[in-house]
Image (cartoon, rainbow, N blue to C red):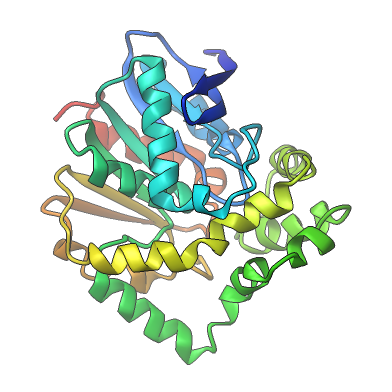
Amino acid sequence: MTTTDNRTITTQRGAFHVRLRGPADGTPVVLLHGWPESSYCWQGVADALPDDYRLIMPDLRGLGDSERTLDNSAYTKQALAADMLGLLDELGIETFALVGHDWGGATAQEMALAAPERVQRLVLLNIHVLPNARGNQAAQDVLRQHGAQSFWYQFFQAAPNLPEAMIPGNEAAWLGHFLRTWSREGFPDAAFDEYVRCYAIEHTPATGAAYYRCYKADTARWAEIAGTRFAMPGLYIYGRHDPVIIPAFTRHLDDVFDDIRLEALDAAHFVQEERPREVAALIHDFLGGNATR
């Protein structure tokens, strides 16, 4: 089995922990995690992918073992995209396939919009497609019919000082609500323990909340780019039982992709940890054994 090289890499934008796996001359595939996880979430997928891929799995700012920045503006998805493009510059990686789950999927989309010549293929998992205005509106209409109850945690995290006051010392209870109730068949214990460890790092309740505290700036930007089309082929994988990113978000993807493939799995939100082998097989098939068109 290929071993994983854990490093902290300092760029002009900050210090980021990254897991690297596979040969230096292998086909580059960048995998971005979401909230409240870290790059550890790709372990099962990485184990199931062929050894000739060069996998780059960073921890996003404020999560995992990357730096904690106490400035909400650093967590807009455009800013996180700049972080990741700078990290890839530091690693000397020019073109790559890009995979993103949850907020990592939003960051991946911002990377694809900012540098379409670098992103050869785009894989999204359980995240709304940012410029897909009609699909996103359709999903919001469905969620509002149920009182948008699944979004309560976003309002909690947006509240000033509340996560910082209530989460420290209660990391397992806090994360357990999401990791275990948003999974269809339980959640891996080793992964759960790892995310609890990371969330107990000083300032993480604030930096985790920052992903939501910049939501006003994010949504204003996404309104401006509504209808923008992605230049590269896309694959959208989703767990059909996700309580937040519901299937309605997958409507009208043709509005923003010329070439999009949709795959639904019997999973909930954390699809890459619930169905790692199936996700790996779909990614490998989409890349055609490599990351070039």
